[in-house]
Image 1 (cartoon, rainbow over the protein chains, first blue to last red):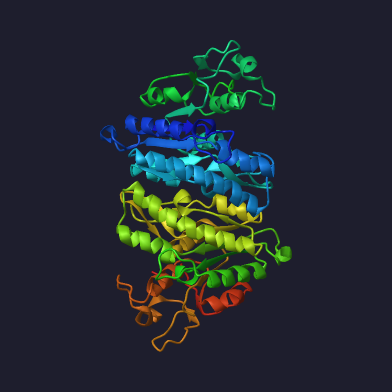
Image 2: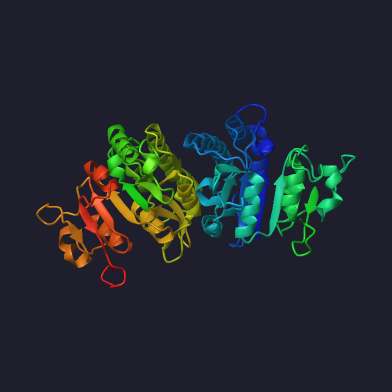
Length: 265
Length: 265
């Protein structure tokens, strides 16, 4: 049983202040991971040796700040090594803070940097080599990945968001459950109420901002599309629901696209 | 044409002082890489877009210090995440110094961390996923790898030396030439003279310390064995010969094992 928990950049950082961790929020998330027993820590006795927990965090005020300054997005790349070092370095500082805080709660967290393990082809498809992650899980560690810059054929280096990394992991690793924790409690309908389940994008298109490339809802449209294509049940929830998700519950919105019926696209 | 240049830990660090870069030696090496034009930099005009240069550096006084303190070797692992973070973190500081110095000379250097991309199976075989490295090379960057700790099936996390990383790269990437720069000018015979060419281990076993597991010659026996198995021409030379190697010459000792004749083992 392998679980992926994505902690949004807006959850673990103070998004408006460059390179500032939200210490209290990060500490609560780390404590919840430790308490779940999914990734070693205090409750590790019930791990069965197979699977475990992978944590992925977003960029928040670390990555976005440096990427925006340099005009680097998931499609507009840079060929300046200095840009790569600056953006990746900032994400490394946030990653070290997340690993450290998880470690302080007894979670055997170790860093995994997507720049080293992932790349995009000329069509923009992101491939993440998961051999290191898989071996870490087998040995009882909790790999901690993050949104990063990655080499991109014909484009230099582009941004791979935390959500992109989650999707790439789900393609290259046997993942059973995915949870995406952001600052909203789920996918919201037009009245601001959490939609319990989404099976097709069309059913929520109006509420999450339609299929326009311009994503005015803080990324929820893109997130739902990505999750529908995962082929793995994905839960979208807020910070208070991390314990419920890790305990096997279904807080927030369950996004459960069936990749075989074609409606996920 | 893809070239791998390994800079020994004893070349780029002051090996007896914990976590101390040998600034002058590192700067000379970085200048030689820039001058060669193989990896962008001032002479980049003659690059043909295919291939390029990969730099790998050893641990020197960064990695060895922390690994020895914790009893972690290439076969004796650790299951403590704190050990992993400490050893990997020290190597990250050295890697950042190497990337920074190369960048200062105009080399488009970007970091690649083996912990994120490599793992050992239960037989100890090291596999390094080279997709990121390959895409970086295609985009004109100079990936900089290093000796590191890697997840190891049934052993936790063990050390992968810089030489191990070079060998793994040569298995997963189309590498044309390998150069290993250490503090000695080549493989030496019993009189201390550089042997120009080694094709079989037996021919140099007496001089380099035989086939004993205890490696009393600073790693040269293990290095020669590893290089004979590469299937790629490998040159062993000292710091003064980096420019000659990068210019296509054959300074020091050429180790050219033929993997098909079985004598490399």
